[in-house]
Image (cartoon, rainbow, N blue to C red):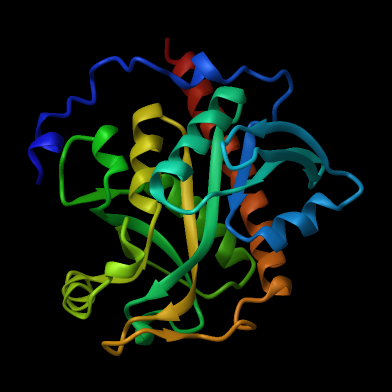
Length: 269
């Protein structure tokens, strides 16, 4: 671990907090979903019951945050930027706007074809081979997801007969430095896949005490010692639309579970 990360103290106050630069929005949906597919976000943004309620600032152009209705309840959604720092910053900002729970989903590189073939992946643990998480959680090789959030997502997938597997992911900052020895080492450690955000997001979730869960689908493979694309239609728009509905349902369930937890704490006073 670098000396910079060794000296990081996550309990120290930040000079800039999300609420300093992001205003709370009245009636912002508690349940929030984010995905990495621009095509998918545009598809749902075009629905008649959807409207823009906020924008996430960026020097490259602001990202709209949408509000829609799912199962009679309001849900927010937006396009995530790739990489731990940008993804975590957006998480912080939508939380400052009023979101209480977040579900994130997108593609990953497969490290174990045998175990993941035909299944979505629910990470319950992430190898911290990135930088953002070390500013939110004390140094460690891995960070675990909240077990209750994982169980909620698993139950929803079971209810809809969606094949899935729960396991470890490898979060890295360097897409083009995923070497064969590194992939083999991570596979030996039990990693099912590789992506660029999960460890960062889990650390923010734990630090801010915001319920969060993520699920992944394979878009390429590093299982054979070389990189292989899986094909553009493997998880095309129709399947991704199903994933969006799963994410909406899970986000609502996370918020419901969090509300029950708060109520139980208040009753115990």
